[in-house]
Amino acid sequence: MPRIVKNLALLASAAALALSGAAATSTTAVGAEAVTDTELAIRANPVIGSWQGTVQHQGGSGPISLTFCANGSVSLHSGGGSGGHGEGTGTWTSTGASTFKFKVREILYDTAGNKTGSVDVNQSGKITGNTLNSTGISTIYDVNGNQVAQAQATITATRV
Image 1 (cartoon, rainbow, N blue to C red):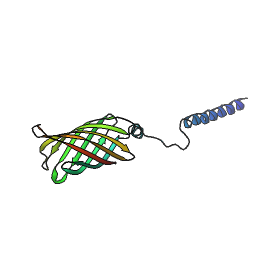
Image 2 (image 1 turned 90 degrees about the vertical axis):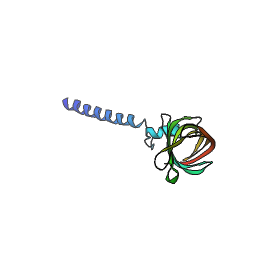
Image 3 (image 1 turned 120 degrees about the vertical axis):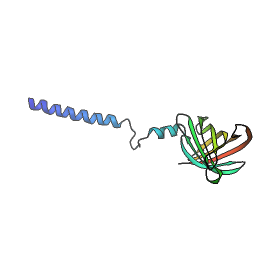
Image 4 (image 1 turned 60 degrees about the horizontal axis):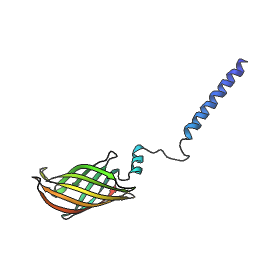
């Protein structure tokens, strides 16, 4: 009798192990890949992530990098080279399945790193695949905070 009990216990253990494995795999579709939290966030809000491209404005065009975070923050880096550069942070919100708007206060610097002014960037955009397109009005201020201009700006960028 003890041998029968031992065999039944082994059989019960094997069945429990098999069932627990079956239960664990039944929560994932066959052939499905694991999805990270970042990938889920991007699917929910496709603007989330880092982008590089070009900004077109009244003074010409230049490089721009944007990073949109799931918490609603955005950071921006523009320019470089002989024209100085800009850096800023702000907020973004989703306005639809693939549309968004954002506001950034960008601080402008010359090539020596001296502050030369600022720009309030206010854009609305759309994500199509791995391409970001946005447009809006930028308000430009001198180093003393005096408004000097408003200009239309357009951004075209690719996910990096």
